[in-house]
Image 1: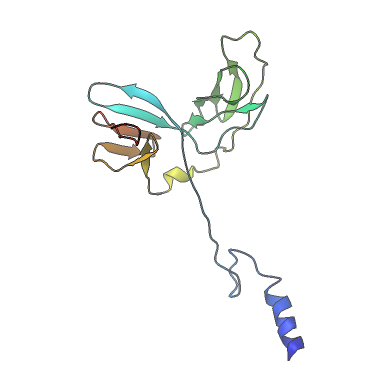
Image 2: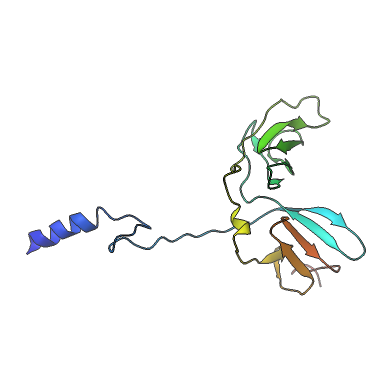
Length: 167
């Protein structure tokens, strides 16, 4: 009997695949923590709009990486520099990152690769639910709207959130 149990275990346990479709395969479980950076795109007396960057950064080149935004054609811009090096940004055309743009005379010419291409779908656009945080505090107020197609978060009023430091 023990030999039969071992044979069964070798057959089913060693050949299972996570997310497979056989009866002995465990369910596919995905945990995604999708924190996204934003930058101020527009502001008026009645509305403030933040552009939401892609969740994953560019490749690391010259000791730094960037978060970025692109539209459906793959055109956009990097918005910050994470790591060492002079501050700069890159224009993005058709998912290709261009040379750095900066006032620096010491910046080494370089490009980055993006973690997405025209064939990829941004998971933010596939019906996820959202939680907006302002200064690391969850915001559930009525004045916010999310537009996943335009990658924006808009506030129709002056939105402030008190932190533990503010009274």
